[in-house]
Image (tube, rainbow, N blue to C red; front, side):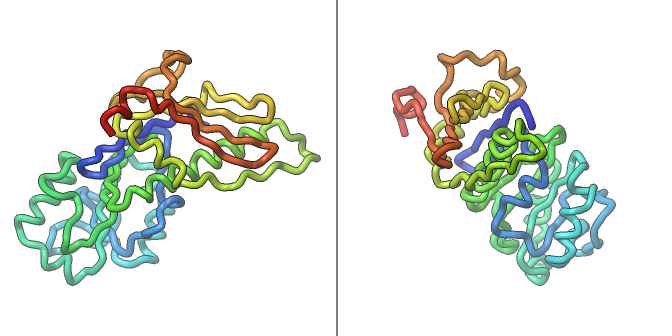
Length: 256
C-alpha cells in the first residue's frame, strides 16, 4: 500500500496528474476500454508499424488487452499512447494533425484540444514512472471510478490485515465515485490522500485529505499537520457505509 495518493486535475484540459496509482489501477477502473492504440513513442518496440503516421499501433481490442497485460505497459516508464476508434479515420489525419500528435508525445502537453475529432479518443496516457501518470480523460467520471476503486481496495486490505487464517475476512462495498465528485474543487488545487496517517479506530477507518499543489506529492505525509486537513473519507465497518466530510469554509471553495 502506498503512503499517499496524489491527484491534481487541470480543469481546462481534463488532464489528471496522479501519484500512487499503477497502470493496472487505470485499466481496471475505466469503462471506455480502448479499441485501438496509437503509440506516441516513435521508437516503441511493440505494435504494428502504421505508415501514414510513422508510428506504431495496437490494432484490435484483443491486442489492446494483451498489451495492457504486457510488461511493456505495466512496468515501463515512458509508455505513452492515445486511443482511436477507427483505422480508416486514422489514415485521414493531415500532416498538421500528425505533427500535433508528435508534439503531444514529445512534450506531454497538447497544442490545441487533447481530444481529436478524427480519432474520437477518450484518453491520452503518459506513464511518468514511479507510479506517476498524466492522463487526459474525455470523461472525468473515469478518473473518479479509478480513485474509488483504489480507495476501496486499500480499505479492504486495511480492515482485514489483522484477520487470522481461520477467520473470514470482511467485505467492503465499493466506494461510489459520485461521492468523490465533491472533492473537485480540492482536486483542482491538488489533493493528498494520506494513507500513512489513516487509522482504524472504533470501527471507523479514516483517510485524511490535505490540500496540496501540483508538486505536493513530493512531500512526506509526515509534514502535513492536522490543521492543514481539508477533508476526510470515512468507512464505517459496522454499518458498511462510506462518507465524506469536506471543510467547505476553506477559501478554496469560496469562488466555486
